[in-house]
Image (cartoon, rainbow, N blue to C red; front, side):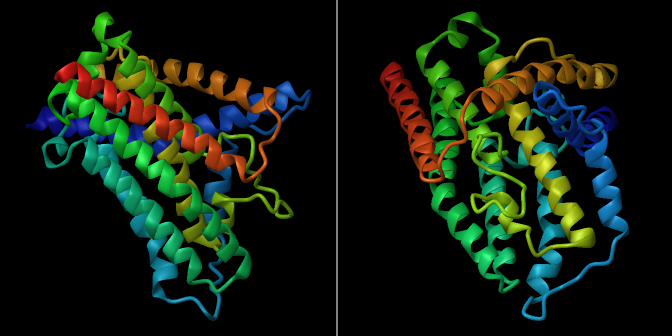
Length: 313
């Protein structure tokens, strides 16, 4: 009992404290590839702490939903870090309360709250970003749920830790349905975390999607939304690495959970390198092409699901 609690705490602390680091590493590498010095890899931490100390300015049109939803969204990501294989490869304290599908629904809940609360600001620019996010998210959420259904059919359960054990078996890892599910989930991760070369944090960029949702936030709520975005990136990326792409090498026990933080760092360096190649080698996609990209991911997830059904017949 005590061991399970400590392992869960190590995992959650790892998610909260390390998630901004990987965003900083990616930004630093992107600057270096562009022959620029770039900011420190710890810049996301500086930005978060700076925003926490700043005053919160709220629009006259905003309601309590606009003010308090960032705290709820941040809490949702903390809850997710208790129940999915992020750092530790075995069930942690609250794993029995939810499965893969439950984790997907929690991600969807956070996205829904973010879009809903942003609309409370009354800004036309935010409304434009919300419309874009909504028009794309239906394909993203469908892909996420379909991939998890395929996993449930293959393993006979919707427990992410059972899928992790299956993925370690070479015969299953190289199966076409697992490969298609991995590609679909990777494409989804690129979109959900803003790694597609289409979004921009520049204020004059009319192609903003996720940044458009937080345009009217400031102070602590903005800090929590940015921090929550880093956590979402880390949670989805860690599921991609531990359950689909690189399921090997994770350790057990309290000491093993601490070692897993270092192992995950090495895995994340590999994933960041892939994201860097995609971001710097592809031309920026036009906005309407995002739907085409997500449609391909959804079709791949459907094919993975169909192959899983055929194999179980």
